[in-house]
Image 1 (cartoon, one colour):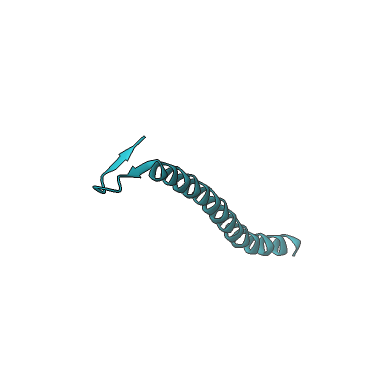
Image 2: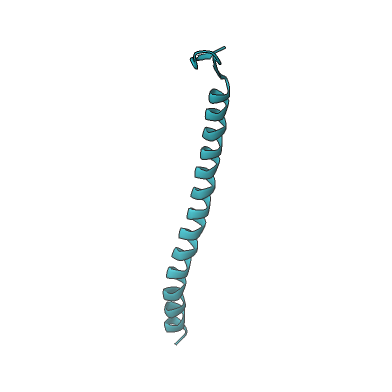
Amino acid sequence: MRLLTGVMLSGIGIPIGAIAGALSGALVGGAICGGVGLWLGRTLDRQISRQYWCKECNHSFKR
């Protein structure tokens, strides 16, 4: 009877562990992607802010 109960509990624990693992993996993946996106956004913002525009002819140039 104890063996049967242990098997039943492990059968329930496997999907719970899989769901918890998937959720934590998604959270970690989301944090990594968010960090990369933030870094990329800041880098692009710096590149764009270094670009200047001529007021007379609307020509862009970089310093």
